[in-house]
Structure formats: C-alpha cells, structure tokens
Length: 239
Image (cartoon, rainbow, N blue to C red; front, side, top):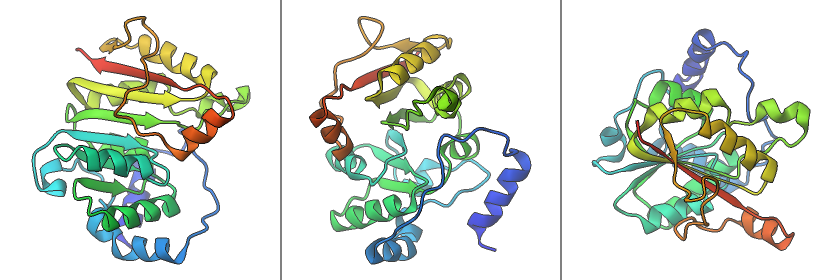
C-alpha cells in the first residue's frame, strides 16, 4: 500500500467520514499527457498527503509568503498568479486528478518553480498538514455553489470551515473568495461576518471590486458571456 493510501486510511480512522463533503467523485477521463504528468511530475512538484504539519521551507526551498488555493480546477489561473508573483510561494489543492495533471504539464512547460500541488481533500489538508498562523492568503475561487436547497449543506464555506481557515492565516492574512452565485455569496458573507477575528475589507461591508491580480478563468469568461455577475469577498484576520 502506498504512503498516500496509508495516510487516507489513518485519516478515516481519526476523522470519521460523517463529515459532509463539498465535492463528489467525477469520472476521470485522462489524456495520455495528464496520466504521464501524474506519474512523472507529481513526485517532483506534488506534496504527498500526510498526518503531520509540513514545513513550507522544506517543500519550497525558501522563505516566502504562502498563498494556498483550494480547488484550482485545471490550474490556469493558479499558474498565472504564480508566474506573476515570483516572490510568493503557491500551494494548490485539488481532488480532480486530470486537473492536477493539466496543471503539472503547464507548470513544467512554463518553468514555474514557486508552485506545489496536493491532490487531496482540502479540509483534511488544512486540518493535518498546515500549522496555525502560517498562511498569508487562502484563495477559494468559484467553489461548487450546490444551489438546490437540499444540497446547501455541501457548500464548503460553512462556519466550521471558515473558522478552520482563520486559524491557519497569519495575523493580517487574507481569505479571498469569488463566486458567480449570488445566493452563495450572500451565504458566505453571512457566515464569515459571524466569526470573531475576521474583518471585511470591503468599505461597504459586503463585496470588493474585482482585484486586478485575480486572473480571469475560462469558467468566469464563459459565465460573463451568459450574463453572470461575479462577487469577490475578502476578509482579513485581525485577531
């Protein structure tokens, strides 16, 4: 059994599976290139899931602010941000393996060195691999809105998750979220506003203008063509 599978078994033992997941397993249609990247590049650029905190210096080889992105999809915007911010380190978490493969391919092709990837459940990674007060930014762009009322409980941004993120942020660190679902945006605003220790960076107490540093994704562009609006929320840890 590989170390990855051993870690999964230990996680299930200590963190029972009654937790409602914010994602579902999808059919994995890999390209040959994605499969090869997962086999050859993930051991180099990836970080294996483990049941103890990692030292960011050890995985990046330098001390720099760490930006953690949850659910990077195919990795296009994450790669763009890493390329544009060479003085920061980027850690991406994604459960969709073909997306991880696609991100690995582009990272190697464009010689991106300040990026590491974890293919695992983000909540588990935050709970077991990330020490308190070590992250400068946590990014969550276009999470699944689970719009049907009976599915709302699957939304990743709930009070317990937002509190978990808060503990991992440094003082002054930022939790940045973007969504094109207004009901989810309202839900996230209500949830995070209720948590002591966060301060909304919006002057109006709701949304911020789209930051220039957040790259457009294909998903976002397609949504805009369909008339969808996007809401950015940015909260800072102040306590």
